[in-house]
Image 1 (cartoon, rainbow, N blue to C red):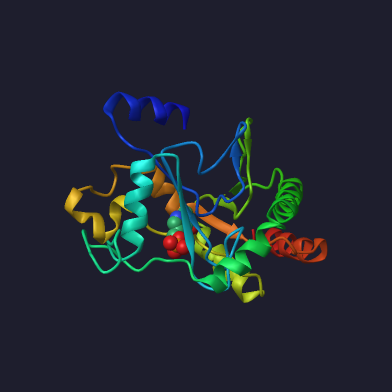
Image 2 (cartoon, rainbow, N blue to C red; image 1 turned 135 degrees about the vertical axis):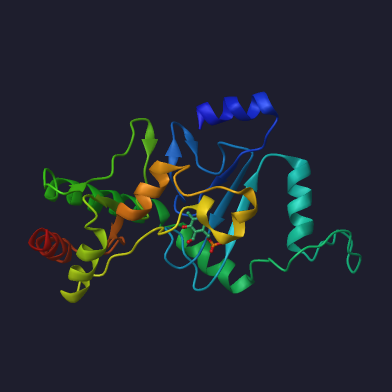
Length: 229
Ligand SMILES: Cc1ncc(COP(=O)(O)O)c(C=O)c1O
């Protein structure tokens, strides 16, 4: 983020942090969502702070952007029934807000549980050939929305199928990088232009991860994984 911040300042750009999988994470003393100009959070039920349906939040310290976001989420309207720009209906409903307000009290506790689970995965899966484990860089606080390994040698899909057959679910976040998404085809990017992102999209595999995953369940996941590998 520090390097990106310098580039953005030089070219007069805003940075939007995608905090969807990172609620509660920090870089140094700063929580995500407070590092760049704008932070976007997801409260989708699988996220670290999840509602009972869809929801999200935007954070910013920029008063002009804040005004604009408020207008956009309210049908492009600042003054009731007067619409200045094309907006959307993106208000967080009260029921979700109440649920999130209560769950927020447990966020740090759940994030610590996730960190302990990640630590256990890293210990149990250390030095197994054919996979690469996630690394959390020094200076940051990782909140482990996912524990994502890399499966080498083009074996990811085969491994995922085998795990599924043995009752262990896993997920691929995400199978297609942004530059190859049809919605961005107008930019004209081709396969091969972002080789690391493309390679990761073929190798990533996220293992079961949620705060209440028990040690017994985790041992079962690891034993099955080792067995398949
Ligand atoms: C990294 C990332 N960004 C953005 C999103 C979008 O979140 P939402 O669907 O709540 O807008 C997700 C959700 O899956 C995500 O994982």
